[in-house]
Image (cartoon, rainbow, N blue to C red):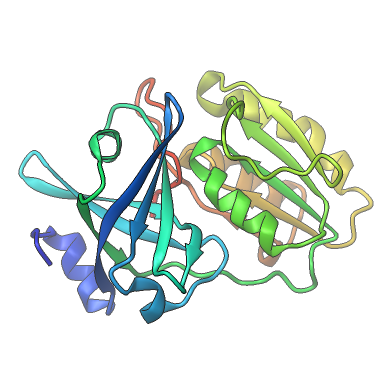
Length: 252
């Protein structure tokens, strides 16, 4: 591919990662701080297929070295070879690129490490702990689980964002971000145990900043005794001072 990728790229190549070039075809300003880019996939979908919550690694140059960030595919369409990527805009190389992107611009992408295991048995209820960074993955997950009800703790403000929550089936609980995620941890610890009490087949999906995700995953597994196969936990971004999360990014 076009840019040199250092040790990360070498490792991915050894793991037989597949590389593609995405081309921006359309840009939509969802809100002043949230941008959606439609891209042609360079043959990606035909080569890899798709699954719920699927993500790709995007490569950005800066300070003389490559930087990779992972983003969830939004509305992938194998027939046309297109999908969208959604970015919450803040300071950072990925956001800088997304903020300036226009039709015709390209970005290199690698597919390796993404997968999805359908929980068996199917969830009696989904418990999702998310924020704007993992919103595209949440939307994909809700679509894949069909009619399953859900309780969702959303850290931040979903106003104006493309959130596929159905009030008839989903209980959305908005939680302001405070104390570096500490307030979210307190809310979940206060509310989740009672909800799980009579739930036969729960499925807990935790995808916030890395520190908060690790704290909640440990709590759910060790203190609430939810079996590990019923818990999905993946940090979607790393908190750095006051930086906001990257929309759709996976800290992978």
